[in-house]
Image (cartoon, rainbow, N blue to C red):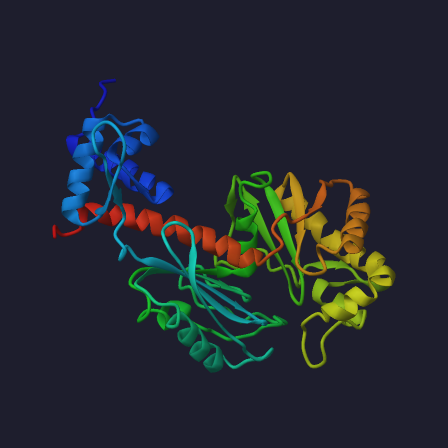
Length: 366
């Protein structure tokens, strides 16, 4: 078959992308340094820098090299390149962060919400904290402790969800704050994404906290399902106290571990009595893991969340699950500090950098 040669426009575009990504990693660099990092020739880099400078996508910082030899000019991305908004919506409150193109959190705002808030309260708090981190904000990534409709980004009301907001609509609420797209997913999926590159490409992530959830990662991608609610394990049938079959969510009611007037798990009470409850909890969780492994065929199961990572619970679940006909290793999730926000932040940075690269050729000359 005849080969197709890349067009000059494509080659220029690829060169520009290499230069931009080098500056994202280096913060500032001379043309010679960019050439060394990217492997491009010095004339190719010089031409790319000239185009990007004319378009306003890179700027001369005013700094120069010192010492012998030809003086080099340091280039960088302009200060108004823009930031990404990262938002976490959870029972503990709402967090908003502005992340710059270098991955630094340059601003952060928080607001408390009730454990059983009305959607209007959360909507007002969301807009308030998002507007409090500065801008310009080119895009947003939102983590929510509720199921999310993958088509619309709206939160979905499911039975027995402990943090029920109704059909909150983050994309619409953030439309006046963010210039570009708003990506929304549930917190367990984001926590699983935070594990990407740290564990196997095929794993199941089970979150055990005030609520329970699961994310299936296959070939390095979170599988969200037709509507976006894959992994909602609360109603998976498993073994409750005495071996009685019941949905997972009912196990906590049977063990007296629900918060008063709520389906939320009382994590403090569970951890105080973890030695006595470990066997019953391991049996219930093990039943859910058997179903997950049968359907998803992961290499490993990760347990996250405040009681999922507890050594007593983790050890009990691993022992129980090892007795199953089909079992895989059960390990603690590696990211413990704000795992959902970590996954959302990393994705926001990736999207921000992609957006800057995509927009650069269309920038108007200054």
